[in-house]
Figure 1 (cartoon, rainbow, N blue to C red):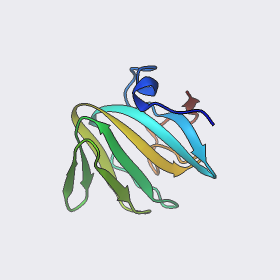
Figure 2: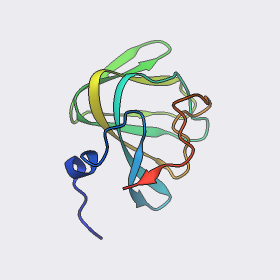
Figure 3: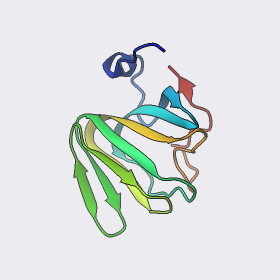
Figure 4: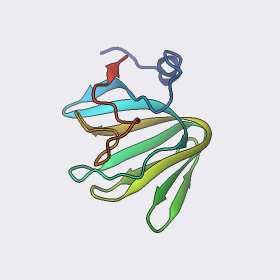
Length: 119
């Protein structure tokens, strides 16, 4: 039951699109990531996904619209909804999702991370 400081955790890595686990709440993992550019359009058939912008700005792209998000904003992407996070410049995000959720959902490419590091 230690305090978790998000800025300190983000200082431990520089890689983008490489989420790290920082906590677990029941069967859900709290993950953080540095992002920049486009991620593949994908969906998670079995789970909703929560994104919180910690630093910077991002845009969540959907099939029919784009949602801009700034620091302190969050969005919940419902299960089965096609989506893509995008950041024009580096942003830091936090995600909340069931343990074992594959970061690229139904897509497998160079962004897919099978095993995440816990920091």
